[in-house]
Image 1 (cartoon, rainbow, N blue to C red):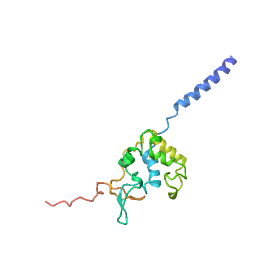
Image 2: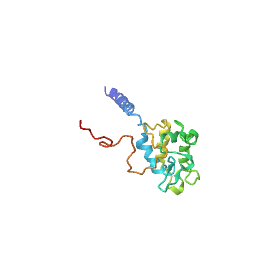
Image 3: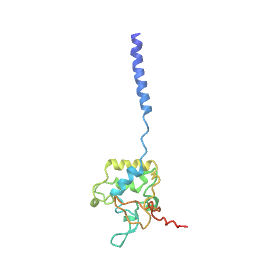
Image 4: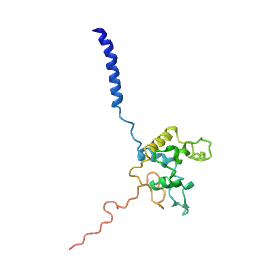
Length: 170
């Protein structure tokens, strides 16, 4: 009997370990608005935002024709090669952030700071591999001034109490 237990225990242990591995949830999908957009806003959008009138009254165009502050621009910039869903190695965005720190085409450029971290690069790669989904986000409209952190988003709906006419007595 004792020998049976010696052979049964390792088998039960292996079965339990295998069951735990199967029970682990699949890696969560990258959330564009929570994980990717903050990177773009902090490190990229200052130079790569929709053409707009700056505070000085002059028209500001996106550097290199690359737009990263709205969905349309992200997928149209560089004739659709900036982001190629499911193909990070074909996406100019991913290629440019993974170039050597001293490469002249690396983004962000050296004068704008350190390269994106390996974790940020890997996160962007995973997001592109998953299809570069931006969810319901559409970004800024053409001509809309670049917002700074803390600015309220623009909406078409007036705040409660505004735009309501006075009731007529009748």
